[in-house]
Length: 80
Image 1 (tube, rainbow, N blue to C red):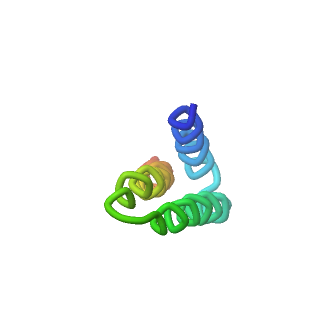
Image 2: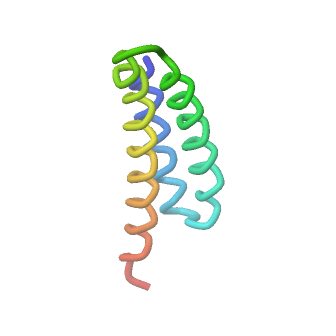
């Protein structure tokens, strides 16, 4: 379920970044901030469990950033 939500967010941000590059920055930042908060909270776990709990948040945050950047890049490459 969580994977589907992250994939849906990535697709939504990519489409938004393609259609309105400037307006996509705020939702991207909000999503990355929420995922960063989850990663920071998970990184407070004791011992070596930290990496197992925090990695999904960090990798999801990276995926959100890449998909939004791909949408903006696609918009830049479009012929005028």
